[in-house]
Image (tube, rainbow, N blue to C red; front, side, top):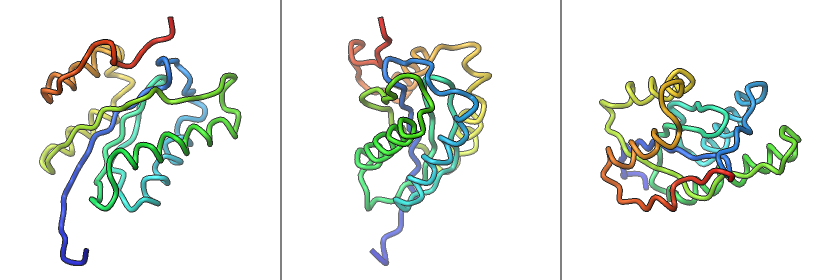
Length: 153
């Protein structure tokens, strides 16, 4: 694909299974480095990564040689395996099924990266569910409430 040129920027959002607060501050930066390595090894570029204890946001410059679903499968499978092998949690760690993927133009990247970098502050005012539904509505994505990331009851 020597003469194929693309500029594709995707903002991914995904949660811990049942939105449990399982990502702890003492190892979350290592998790983000590990996920960044997965992304780089798949020939994509991490522009921003952050989150809070129950979910992660990643802004990626993505290459078209790999599908979004293949990349997310790799990120979730490999990072959950890494978390479990390192025994970072007392529970078996899993990511929630599904994810959000939202595209942005180059002119929007700085604002999206700032938004991702300020997750802790942002979530003092808004829950993850409110945030996620806002993304779906802003991008006019049809959704069924019963399939929104589930909490442990």
